[in-house]
Image (cartoon, rainbow over all chains, first blue to last red; front, side, top):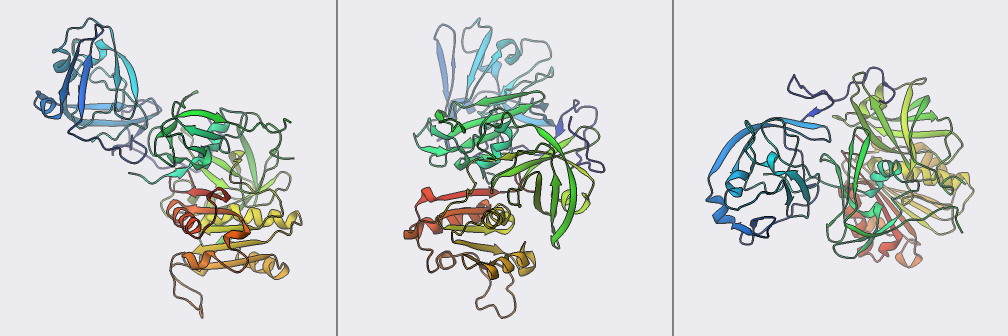
Amino acid sequence: MGVVTPGWTGRRRPGGERLPPGQYLVTDFPVLSAGPTPRVDLASWEFRVTTETGQARSWDWASFRALPTERITVDLHCVTKWSKLRTPWRGVSVDALLAQVETSAGFALARSYGGYTTNLPVAICSAARPGSRSSTTARRSEPSTAVPRGSWCRTCTCGSRPSG
Amino acid sequence: MSTHLDGNVLGGELGELFTVDVTAATGRCASCGTVSAIAQTHVYTDGPGVVARCPACSGVMLRLVRGPGRAWLDVRGISCLQLALPGEP
Amino acid sequence: MAGAAVLGRLTWRVSTVTSVRDETATARTIALKIPGWPGHRAGQHVDVRLTSADGYSAQRSYSIASAPDGGQVELTVQRLPDGEVSPYLAQVLDAGDLLELRGPIGGWFVWEPAPAPVLLIAGGSGVVPLMAMIRARAATGTHSPFRLVYSVRAPGDAFYAAELAERQRGDDGLHVAYVYTRTTPPGWPVPPGRIGAGQLTAPGWTPDRSPAVFVCGPTGFVETAANLLVNAGHDPRMIKTERFGPSGGQS
């Protein structure tokens, strides 16, 4: 910790007991894609799942949007110290996607437009764990933040495209 | 999208990771090949981490995230970084 | 010479404020004594860190305003109305207080004494590192021609006005031209307006003289000025820019 500046408190942000120690609360969505917004043409947009055997299943925008969607509300906590509480998401569960392939893989590598990648255990991405859910929203093809808090998990790649 | 600064503002953070100044170092963008001084990159600081983009093509050249007691530095977007080592012949 | 040696990893240091003085109604110059300071080069900056009692901290970058001069360093801080750090520095910090900082930082936007003419373009508080260059030029007895084009909203917003006027009086090689974007002084020959191509050229300052150019200020200003310079024929490789802004820069 740095030398304390007497009388300075900075911009105070309310937290409460849902805010883990050391985190800053944000209420708007921090700009995760630091930079000009990349544009992805919906006509060429694709979501693809490839299994460990090479089996691939992909969805274009229309077929992806036709998948069943669900709504969840979760707390996001980023390792870089910001938290956004009670964030509503609407989207397609990873389980709905995994149900269309056969896999016994333990880990998944997620790639996004913009070149970001991250690895996660499949168990964290899937709903197989009691009480856990996960989803990717169709508009938010980029991962955003991840610490599994028992209810939700996504991955944080700072500088990725904005979610929403 | 937020406005940007330039790589001069990274000098302090990078100065904690490197022993020489990096803002005057030149990097070749891995996306388009343009060579720029790191000081000339377009830097976005509003996110959880810092992103430096190529001033020519906007490709991400560098990402830096600081957490408690550690730093993550991603320079995949720089295919070659040339640093001046002062004091050497 | 400061900056020539490998500095090693930058770390935070604690400095002591030796004095403060107002530059304008909303900006203040802070003089700091920094033990172990290795010296600096004109154009470099420091990062300042404030920490509250519960561990929350904020950092901002501030250009060094003073010429290289041993362990003394001056910063000029513009108070921004909803700044998180600048109101504290510009209004609360006082002589005797401690201030944590890291530096000197920067190897790109620096001027080393040399004979080549230098064109300085400042937008608002972007004048600070350029003033360090003007002061360093005088301190080293360098005679290279210097021209400062300084854009401010109104006369009362200009930093170092009296000092710049005095330096010009004493030195044929230094010239300062103001651009007023909102309010001009009484009797000013042109209405207020943003910087344009006309203010960037002057006799003896055309691109064929190959001046080194330093542009500093908010991002929008810097990009406008840099485009004007390139369109006027200045070689982009001779133009160095530093952008200030609400995040990471001054606030």
